[in-house]
Length: 506
Image 1 (tube, rainbow, N blue to C red):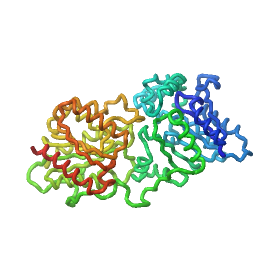
Image 2: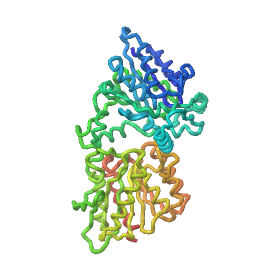
Image 3: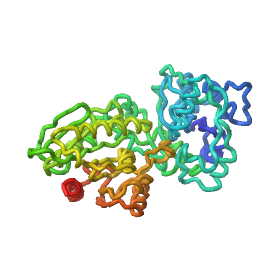
Image 4: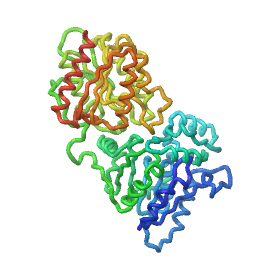
């Protein structure tokens, strides 16, 4: 049996593991929930300078307290911020560790502070500025009861547990978020398991898609030593489903779990499969980050600008505008007599929406300035995570924007994205869109989290003056052009492109 050493996330102490620890112990495991200095009452800080290294030392002490002669394998579990001291300790005691479990958190890199993982982007920027000014001491106050959503999805948390989470929350020492994680590389070879809480916005399928993009930095996630589990709950599974979490941890310790497929080792990944409609093999005209597909027709033509989703890793190859789906849409538009345009924007991370919005705006102006384009007749078509980029166009639709289309879009920030207070919220912006025609393609098998944002948008649109047309793909998955049977997607695609062109040319 294993020895589980568990480290909690921001604002929470060892108490959050109570139910999960009891179940692990009942299964025969030895369990230690690490009290962190300056966080847990049982381990008060000797000075105001509590940093990440302080908490790494706490975890090292827990590791060293386990009898090495017992033969029991140590499994380190880090939730949220807790993965930073876990990795720091595992790196220094790699020979003692059998597995690291990342519980609903990323895999931090050497030299990067925990601040980079703070989901609330506005708060992250404030703390970064504070750090630059040398004000790294002090504490960060815990959230109020209705503010936990800014740190992760509270889905699945009973009211009593949310009350308990709030009542027992404590300030987080700022130094723990600002001090960089230092790794020698020893931890890189350890077996690792990621436990993804899907109601917080990330599941195994999404991680596989990220690996499929071919970014070398993500290739580590598909190594045989790395496994994954999903839990259909929010960000605090030790409180929302402790029994299920205990079962997953036991299975992880036994080496079980889903292993990802390395990029390029199987059939083409979803984003590189053929477009389901036959389209003419028109050449592209590349202008910077924009590709134009121009029909063989006289005079300036209306244009449709196709905006890919994301985040897409910066190292993804090929880049989005070379994906068969985007090329297929642009050529389909050209076959219908209008200019099709694709672009690459820099939505590489959730924090990049401002930069991506600027990229899209610049690309649209480049398209409108082309003499082959009728600058007064342009449509914008957004996909997936690019759906949040519709916000500016809905808020202030220019006269030349004749139609806005979106395929399986995300139309409100997902839990854990830290964009709650940002301007990127299409479901709120729709009330300002006036009579703008909107063509919305919905996937019948969309994930519940994304489907909820679409439903909120549709409800808001029905109370506005916008002309909303819904086109459903009942059995369609997210990215249905290449993931669903072609016979089910073709009618919807033909219907959608003709609706958009009708608004452009009518």
